[in-house]
Length: 390
Image (cartoon, rainbow, N blue to C red; front, side):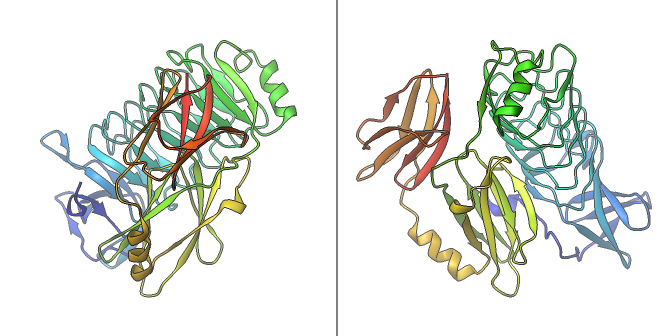
């Protein structure tokens, strides 16, 4: 999709254009619709015309919107705000603390999302029926609502925070490709109903330590060996990859690899985001700014493997020039890892999640069979991906 088809809005700079529709409470600014909540806050609402939700492409919501002399904080996303829309990527600012029911439900093209750090609950059917593949729930989330991820057939990896207490019925129903759960919760979250994971296959659950693992083993639901395989997470021993792309004058996009989670820190060391999205967008200011990107499993931050992103256009262009030609694809299917693309002159390394080396060869074969079910980290040249073999 071309940049012109994206809705890329500043995160901290107020919007300079504003229009009021027929209802005095409603604001339309840069293609996003808002409802005024109070004197200082607004909520994002659907862009409905003739019954169709017209949001599309990549949307980066701003922290503030300016209208009629007032700076409003974007504090909420209304129920069904992006329901059945054509959005593909969504980045939500930390000013948002509430996301309504079915806010993104049936947005079938939505494959990537970054949730705000202040979120306290995942609402009912919030992402049901989307194409999201990897999701991090930020620390502070205590509950996952009914059907929150139901029918997310592309969902493969979920990161659950230490604060999580309950998961409602059908929350992950028919997520039949969900194979990896990272849970930092010291006590197993209470599953409310018999169909929380209905329609899912076998899942590997990564846990912080032996004591936590024993508590999950003793739990009636999480201890089900036919459904869950419990592991102690020891972090990853493989260097992550990151590509950076300059998008016009206002944005740089970080393409994040490995199906990992990443913590992104601002120039003053403050945590800006935690995300497993395919891309994270940073604003370009008047001066060059460096951001720290740290791979994480929530339980362990891989600080020795941290990366630095820059907002300086000249530096970004230099990074782009160093990128290898062509694009590699790495995927796992039926006990085999398949590698596509030009691998001439490259080596292939395959590790398990504990850093044990399983395969080391020049990249001659484009398929490698290994025992499963298991998560592997595959590195071909400078490209690293995480795959699950059944």
